[in-house]
Length: 108
Image 1 (cartoon, rainbow, N blue to C red):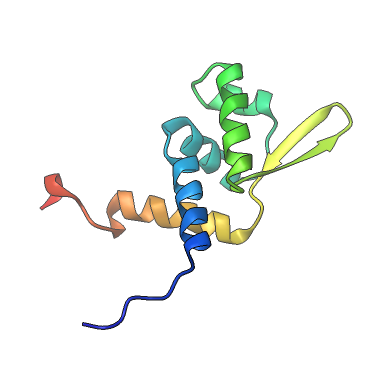
Image 2 (cartoon, rainbow, N blue to C red):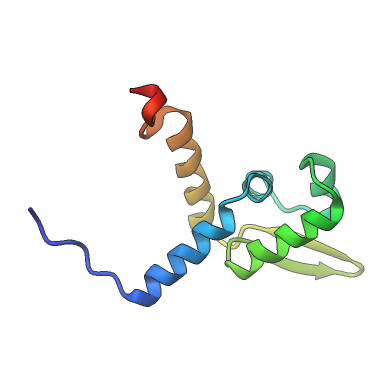
């Protein structure tokens, strides 16, 4: 058996924060929408089936986890993914659940 990869405890903590940040259907849906480009909370409310207050709550959690960033332009606030690596993370999750990864008990 080979040695396990060395990872710092702070990096493990950060990974848990990121995974917890994504671990809700609406949050993952928001990330998928933002994968296509930036959006306002109002625009997200038209796409994601959640109350605008809930959208704001989810945006705060995603921002705190570092999964999205915000910028203000006049009265409007725009959200987007902070980097291409965040997009690749989302792509990897989609690949995993749509056939590229482990199928789980039902797919055995």
